[in-house]
Length: 109
Image (cartoon, rainbow, N blue to C red; front, side, top):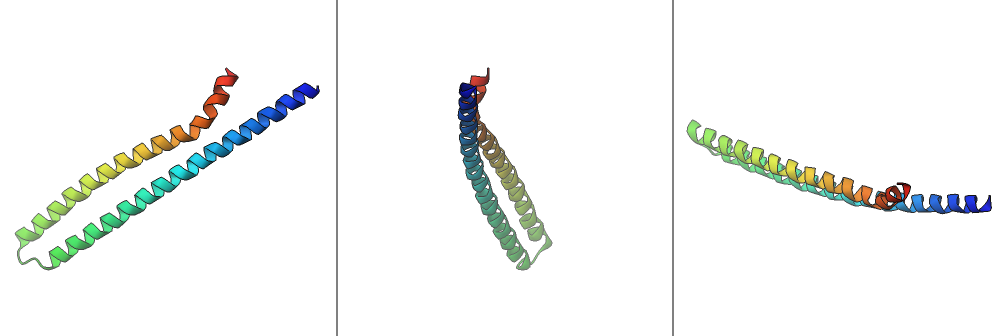
């Protein structure tokens, strides 16, 4: 009976330690994602503001269309690149959060 309690206590402590490691990985990953999102938002806003400034100084409709087309193309390419980067960060976050539990899963098998 005492051995069972000791085993249970040992596994409980191991599970809590693993959970804390996983939580630390989640926090680190979430911070990286938030930083990346903030940087992208700032760059996107600055690019939009620069485009508006260019458009205000335009003298012809053709030049305005050219500026707007270039902006749309750059915005789309930037969005796709950022979405890819965020997808990779989320995948890495999931792997890092699961990593501490790998040993527990292996023991359970």
